[in-house]
Amino acid sequence: MFEFGKVNFLIITSKERSTCLRFATLLNSSINIIKHNMKLTHCDAESINIFKNYDVIIDATDNLIARYVLNDICVSLAKPIVSGAALSLYGQLTVYNYQNSPCFRCIHPVRKIDRNETCASAGVLGVVPCIIGMLQALEVIKMCTGMGEVLHEQMLLFDSMLMSFRKINLRKRSNLCNSCSSPEPLKIDYTSLCQCEPIPTIDDDFNISVQQYIKNNNDDIIIDVRPPNEYLICRIEKSKNIFLGDLLKMKQEKIEQIKDKDKMYIICRRGNASRIAARFLNSLNLSFKAINIVGGLESWSKFGDKMFPLY
Image (cartoon, rainbow, N blue to C red; front, side, top):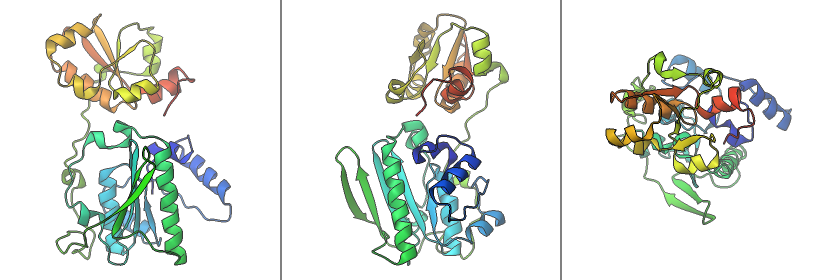
């Protein structure tokens, strides 16, 4: 299982599931690939019926809720999970729920999500998830063939800047783990478990599409709320970078000094952080309107400047 927002790390650039399927088939035409169009947000009968047909599950998501759901389903079905993660310049790998090894919930009983702890928000060097993905594939091969030692009860840590690998021991399976102690999949609210609040919506008056923005021939200021390291990768020429975390801490007087007209347009990578920023700014009763550019730079590349680079 993987998240389609991250398929660029797998060399595939299109988000279309059919394209991913064709690409994988070209790599090995002798294998049978089955496509499942679904979001993994809770343990339901449909999800359980899908996963019970597979011997090994690979977790390549960048979503904490999906990790918990996937873990709880696999524990109830006694399926091992080859779990990989990458953030910034670092990666990690382990196999959960294999031969009585701990599950993900044993190691992380309750976890508050941090919006800065995902590839989408904090960024990642593209080579790192590729390396972790190859190592995940190797663990699957070892389990299926019985060769070598499977990486369970330990975690492999990768530092791309030092080009170093090291292993740490994980705690044993916990008798207090809600997932391991339950014979059935947990029936819980995973959003509440992760304390993950949905990104707030804003009125249509404070949203604008890339097409409409270009059609209006706007020359108003664009504030890019991505982290500075991502802003350096690619940016709209007339934009100015103010990281969302810094913007939320700014005093109203300082914010007023930024604007030069009666509107300020906000953009980010995919339109989530910019929506938060626009909602925050408009709640301050400023002398201008903050407008969210829907879809962010990904929409800018698709509907505006088709030569605009993505990462």
